Length: 228
Image (tube, rainbow, N blue to C red; front, side, top):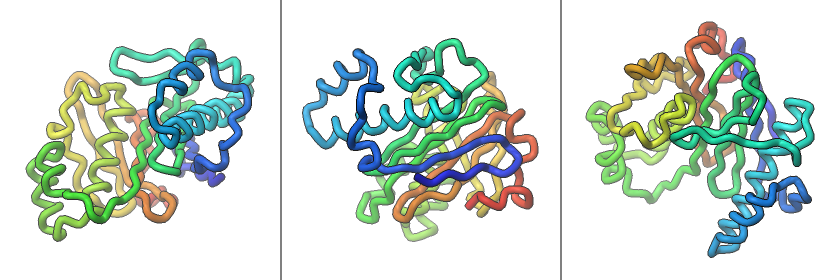
């Protein structure tokens, strides 16, 4: 398991793998077990169970609470929170065999990771979910998959941190420029100001983290040595 902190933000990010949670034990709730049994493919079930187990154990370590006793609330657009713990913010992400969790006590946080798929048709996908400026950038880079996933993880991180989810059209969100180590400030009318940046991730993956304006007030390139 790999842990690092975003400099001067109080945000912790932990990376782990599905195999590390192959034996989930008894921490899952009855409702989570029922949902797990509904998966048609065993691989999907295995990954989902591992992600939920990781979430409970890592949040338990962070808060000092019993992992099995944690109760989760879900907002209108799907943003989860710990019932009765308004002081703790988190964001879970998983892609293929990678699991990531961002945790904060300073404000909302959004984390996203995606495995970079070199053979994916990034032109068609970018036309569906990227702004005009982002599409132009992706095409100027030879439709490189790594650039597309850098853009996409940033969008997902913003939508997760803000709690808007896919109720907000990704095309209406521009997360440029992609300067290394420099967070982008984004204002969503009626939903606050956010800062998002690409962060370190295991080889073969792209990842991004987004923070609210309060938590990210000291988050900038020169003070963010762990930003990618």
